[in-house]
Image 1: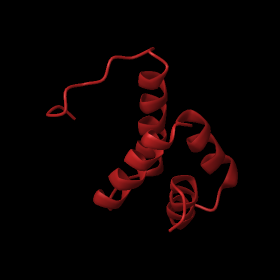
Image 2: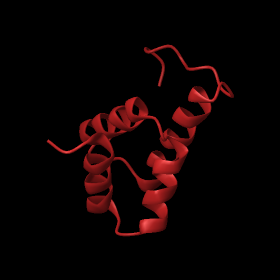
Image 3: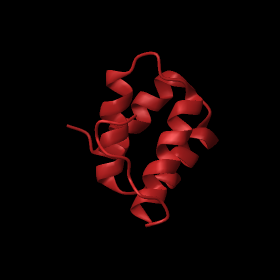
Image 4: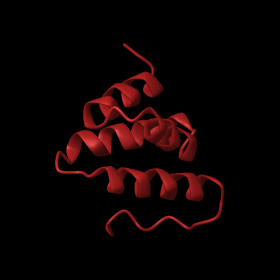
Length: 76
C-alpha cells in the first residue's frame, strides 16, 4: 500500500494534471493525518471541485498551525 502522500497525489492527478496545484495542496497541509483526511474526504465527495480542495488544504494547515479553531464535527 502506498503512503498517504502518494495516494493523495494519485487522486489529485485524476482531478487535474497541474503539478503546481498539487504541490500547493501538499504544502498547505504537510501533516500525514491531514493528507489522509483530505484523501478520504475527496473520495467521499465525488462532486468536489479544485477550489474546494484548495480551501480544505488551507483550512487544515491553518488549524494545524494554530491560526484557526476547528469547527465542531457536526458543522460543515
